[in-house]
Image 1 (cartoon, rainbow, N blue to C red):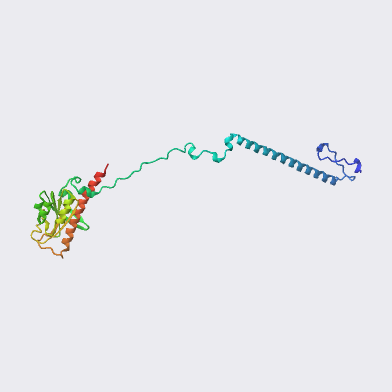
Image 2: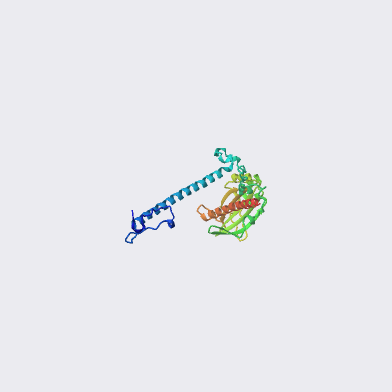
Length: 293
């Protein structure tokens, strides 16, 4: 078949470089042969797709080869590399697993010292003792009440500073000393007597043997008039540790105390409470000193 002046149309080879292809002839009217051009374009597309498919296959082969090499390299660790986990050393066989855990010696704080122990026996109760040490200062404040301090006394013969049935009680229990102090307020005076024994048992026994007629002698002087000499007065008895303490309270005017005289009762109770606190504080101070390293 003839296509214009060029004679028979040359056959297009898609695998032949473009520079070696024969030129397309145009039609007799000088226009391009559009059908031939479309056919050539389709051939080029097929060629590109073929090249992409071939290139992708080659790339896949290359990646597979790399992975195979990596797997082989990982298995080059010898026969132990393929050993199952059951053949791994036990935890006790792993180096460092047998190191002993740190241990600490248990420590126990010593029990606190009991202050009463230090005022229950002359062997521990060794701090200095006198009326002014046990009852310091020139006045005493209990709550809102202020008492003026009067005379003091320290008597080794306990019986001589007592009356009624108390002298025999103190002698029977080997009283060592009797410390006395007087406080006064608004015409009411109170004498506190503290009997000192060697042991708590002696003081406790003396407290139990004392009765309503066991009285400490009132201590006057230093601005305090005589009181409770023949008049009815109110008294108390108690003990703590190796100390027994007594009070006698009455009017400095000499009149008798009755149950209606609440001021006398209150002042007597205040002074008895103060004597107890001072003896206890004495034990606390000695316990604290003994606990120091």
